[in-house]
Amino acid sequence: MKKIPMRKIAAAAPTRVDLAGGTLDLPPLHLFHPGAVTINVALDLLATCEVAARDDAAIVLESRDIGRREVYRSPAELRFDTPLQLLARLVAFFAPGGGVEVVTACAAPQGSGLGGSSALVVALAGALNRLANAGHASDRLLAFAPDIETQVIRSPAGVQDYYPAMYGGINAIHLGIGGASREALSADWLPTLDARLVVCHTGQAHFSGANNWDIFKRHIDGDAATQAALARIRDLARALYAAIGARDIAAVAECLDEEWRHRRQLAEGVSTPTIERLLATAREAGALAGKVCGAGGGGCVVFIVAEGRREEVRAALAAAGGEPLDARLTARGLTLTEATD
Image 1: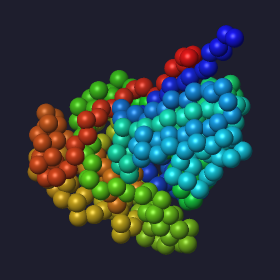
Image 2: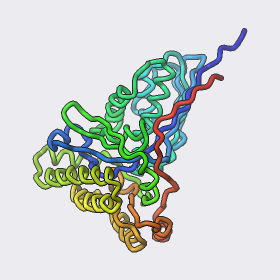
Image 3: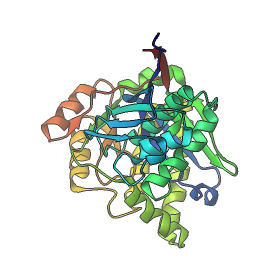
Image 4: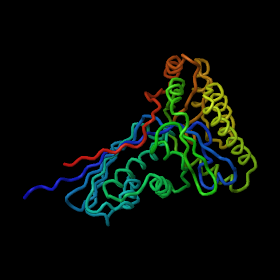
C-alpha cells in the first residue's frame, strides 16, 4: 500500500525588547490611562516549533528547553496540569484532527523577560492553524493568544508581546476602547537602533506574573502612587513614540531612562541589586540609559549606548558577571514552512 505523505509545519517567531509602556497592556489598565501605548521591537532570539501530523490518534508534546516529553493516546486524554500545558491547550484549541507531534524550543533564556512564552504561542498557533486548515487570520490569532496564555499563568496576560512575534520590526501597540491595534514604526531606522542597543541577561530568571499581579491589584484597589506611576509611564511611552518618529536616539535614551525611574517604583521586586549593579557598570562603559525587560525581578536589561560604544559596554557587562546576548533586532515576524514526509 502506498504511504500517504504526512504534513509537517515548521514555525519561528521572534521575541521582543519592550522599550516603554509595559504593564499598561494588561487589560483593563489601559482604559484608566487614555492614550496608552506600548513600544517594543522584535529580537532575533527565536521561538521555534515543528508540528507534524501522525497516522494515528496520539498527541506527542516535547519541549527541548526543559527536556520534557509527554505522550497521550488521543486528544481526549490531554492534560492541562503539567509543565507542557501551554502546548496541550493550543493543540486542544486548534483540534487539528488525528494525531499530531509538537516539538518546541526558544533561543531566549527562560525567565528572560523577552516574551519567550508569548513568541512560542504565536509560533505554535501559526503552525497549528496551518496544519488544521483553520484559516484564522493574524488578527484572530492575536486575539486567541493572550487568552490561552492567561489560562496557563493564571493571571492577566499583557497583549504587547504577541505583536512583534507576529510582525517583527519596531511596534507601537495603541491601547484603547475596543482593545489594541498595531502601528509599524520607522522600519528604515531599525539598523540604527540596533547598532545602539545591548541586551544583557542578569543570570536571574523572573516570573512576570508575580510583579504584574501585584501592580495590577494595587492599581485596581485605588493605590494613588501606582496609578500616578503608570500615568507617567503612559506619558513617557508617548514621548518615546515621538522620539522614534523623529529618529532622535538621544531622546529615546532619555525616555528609556525616565521610564525606568518610574517603573522601579511600581513594585519592590521590579529591581534587584544585580540589575542595579549592571546598570551602573554599563553607564560607566558608555550606556546612555537602561531598563529592565518585562516585569523585572531578574531576566534581561536593555541599554541604549553612545555611538561606537556597543562592544565596550558588552565587554564591561560580561566582566561584571552579566551575559550580553548575541542578539540583534529583526524586521521579520512569524515564518511558516511546510513540508511532507
